[in-house]
Image 1 (spheres, rainbow, N blue to C red):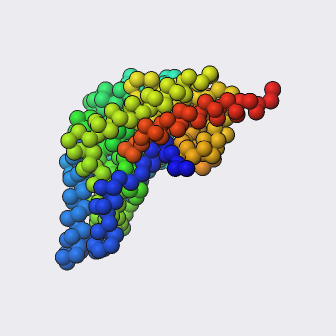
Image 2: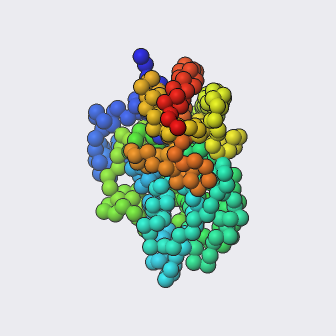
Image 3: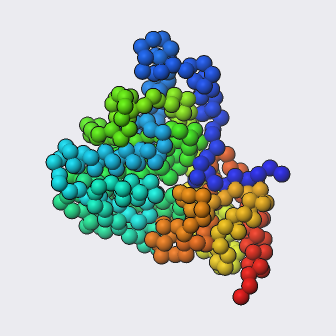
Length: 383
């Protein structure tokens, strides 16, 4: 029996175009792109062409794209760099960060481990933060506001981001946007957002693991997080992972080609609408997150009367891979900080997600299996 993969929001399969682009750089072109010989020039050109593709997809200039090894590294680079800039370049004796309670653990952990004081802004029942709440938390010593473009667990798109960026800019505060969950699924215009920093990653949109980027507004200089070399115009030390970067560029080019992103988003919304309809037809199942203003490729819902783990395992036994909203960063199924911040049950949620390779048959399989799985698990309960 062919398995059904409905966990694209965690990591999407590699697009064929990305694999095809990567193979020559795994088999033949192995040189250090920092060398001046002909072999080095081949890999350098490949990186710069990929930089142009990534920049084009995200509305940035190529020189604003700093390649990293993961979205987590890009986020840490942004947070660490801004805090270090605050202490060193601005001569501040104390610095302050504003973020929100529904950020990815990479953002929250990076903020908490920094020497800055952190204010964490709450959210409503659908995981939405208000612009005025974030802006009101800015203080004279605030150096960074870090907010997500859309939530990675419940899919809520944060409509307040443009207003937050504009208000922070008026106050001279840098803004970092975590767009890792959103990239490749909704349009992202770095220039139009007006943000200073933006994190994106390849593996969420059909590129390879091992490639991501921090978009850095032109003219902004931050101390490098990874040191030991002058790569990425001295903004990120270490030899570049050429095959991964090339794969990222190829996936970005495919999405940017003739409205492909919009085509895939429309298809994804249709599939997740069907998933949601089937789930909500089961008694005591409720949608989590904004029902309309959400990412097209994922849905999250609570399942009353049964824990997440047995639902996941039962679906897995039927050949269906999905994810629970209760574990975004570890192998253990722990209560979700995002759902807890929303004030909903943090232990009983499911997050199916689709992507470029998903089919109607995949959704049909889930829609047939889910009601039966829940019914059998509920029947096992003892009062």
